[in-house]
Image (cartoon, rainbow over all chains, first blue to last red; front, side):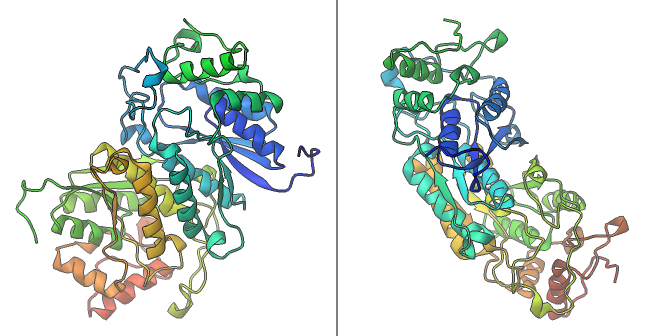
Length: 236
Length: 236
């Protein structure tokens, strides 16, 4: 149900990481008739190139606004994504998802959704979109449907308009049951330019994707299963 | 059950605003045998003096560590506490709590608890203390017991150790049913020096409390009901 520009009145806050999933999520929110507001977070991650990617994605997909919220998460959280630890390179995709990996950032989606919720309240909307995926994922507990359901219930008790009954909070997770190949297919139908996105946990010089981390492997397999070449470059 | 120094092994993250309630909450956590870790937030609030107060309180009450986490909440949230709006001065205490006031910061406790949760995970504890109060409060929905219960349930689905069953999240709210007078009495029993705390929403030159905002009025009444003088200075 693509709508003509200018007729959108519903607003939605969309979490943007600069990656493939959140770009697809933004395209879906737009396709559902929402005027979109992208939010990204600067928390000391090594792969700051993802924030630039998020901005490009927001612009290309017609977001009304894109904000980057700085948070001092680095001071209180440790993981392979913010510390100088080794990012694991699985040689077998079957190893991915079996246990929670060291790339885990404590309470990440809890923190990100909370800041998105604050902005949503300011924008006078209850609609949030997050591109979590419980199928081709890396074992993060805060990507599962039961987490999202509990988050939504909590948010409806936290927010003035929700408590007053005028504007309930709804956490949209349109990708949660899709495979990576299905996500890519859906995004291409909606005109997502995946060359603008970044997924790698451990990019090299010039921000070229490593090709070996979980995120790179899942992404490459998703394109391959569609019989397509990934439009981004890889080191290996 | 005050324990001797050095025998504390349980850790707790305690949210510290610099105010009277969170100082009392920290003293209670210590009294319950926790090694305490204070967390405060710098989010563009006008009354930055509260952060200095939080640091003094943490030191005086023997917190193992105190961190101030910067968050760019000002960019996405609007309220009388961060914008240049008029802070309401009620002339009648009965007016307080009847409706949600313009000093409301969107999703504030949701955001603050989420960052405290991230730190708790890093510190390998599931215990968080927050000095919310559902009795002498200003009508914030995220101070109510049903919000805290829903938050705890969500957190237990978000965090690796909780999901694995090794370290459940528990949100302690020791003040939630107490009156301001009871909070002050309990804190004095535990040796809290309230001259170190700041409660005012709208301090004047030299960070002197205004005496007229909701927070000042509730605080003064709490001391008066104990037959005590508040040790801080007021403009009026």
